[in-house]
Amino acid sequence: MNIKTASNDFPISDLLRDRWSPRAFNGLPVENEKLRRIFEAARWSPSASNLQPWRFIIGEKGSVTYDKIFSTLVEFNKLWAVTAPILMLSMTKKTNNKEEHNNSADYDLGQAVANLTFQATAEGLFVHQMGGFNVAEAVKLFNIPEHFSVATAIAVGYLGNPEVLHENLKKMEISKRERIKANDFVFCGTFGQNTELFNL
Amino acid sequence: MNIKTASNDFPISDLLRDRWSPRAFNGLPVENEKLRRIFEAARWSPSASNLQPWRFIIGEKGSVTYDKIFSTLVEFNKLWAVTAPILMLSMTKKTNNKEEHNNSADYDLGQAVANLTFQATAEGLFVHQMGGFNVAEAVKLFNIPEHFSVATAIAVGYLGNPEVLHENLKKMEISKRERIKANDFVFCGTFGQNTELFNL
Image 1 (cartoon, rainbow over the protein chains, first blue to last red):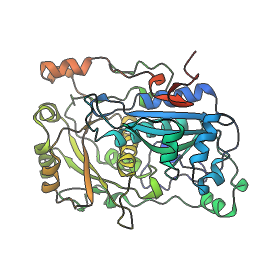
Image 2 (image 1 turned 135 degrees about the horizontal axis):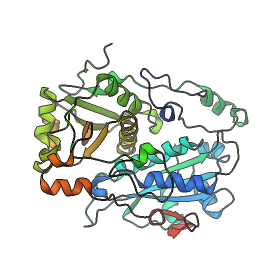
Image 3 (image 1 turned 30 degrees about the vertical axis):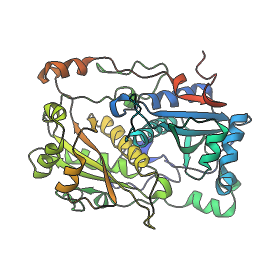
Image 4 (image 1 turned 90 degrees about the vertical axis):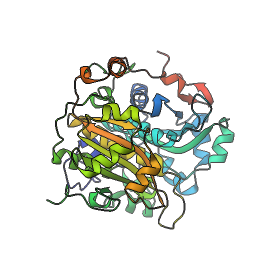
């Protein structure tokens, strides 16, 4: 349980219920064995035709790689990501082994990042994914080949005190997590039609 | 532990290690409370700007919805999916609240399906995702609106005996799970450059 524990309608694994995306990290570095394990979790994710289209670039605070990833972030994300001990970029190989477009690449990267996040939560870590960064700049800084596509920037670390954040960010850090109801996204019969599953 | 337990290089959560995508299900129905919990797990997945672009259509064996989903599968998948007690379609809302394209929709759906899969594994269930189905037919059969995109078909159920499968499928069912090494997808400094993390 933590301040952002999901207000779930049905019981789910603690590792899913207590996961959220903080902006305040406590500055402690992440142990190498934990980093190895979160990537190992990503590694065993499923993918279409087992193509494993996920790739990551990782930077630890104080390194050139970290500074390069940080430099691509939009100003809003720079405000808080400065406290993260680890920054990553996630990307996909856009093609299959025949150089054809892999339609499932983004979907499968999402699954791998979810696996990584699940293991991170099991390790006491928190993960915050970002879309707010300059993709073209990231491609240039890391010489990312043409048939790869950068998807997200990801901060990883231990939870910090919201008090260190800017006033506006502090409010977001302690606000309730909101989701649409299961009836709004699970259908039966035809698109948009409710199932009887959630009518208790 | 099961016959397909990952040959992992570093320890990971049992729920990730023992997850795999079987083709033989044992025919037992899935309890409604477990279905509610796996969708609840998907519900608390993260998404870009909290857009929650995931949608599902679920059919239980014996229902019209199940038969419609089954009818869209390619012949190879029909061979084995016939034993699955639950079939689903996963899809994304392609646009954000301003009717602009949501670049993260597929990635976020992948995360939601991964969350659903963790919870399913925690419930003793197995999940097998498929790309092999007729998307245009699915769109027609379920009146899926234009700004939604069907991504995968998904079988869910309890593990069955590989002996029930066709000879060729049986071999796949008991073959070792293969993955590229972490050094092949985690980089540092520049794209393709190894980190020191995995040099033990």
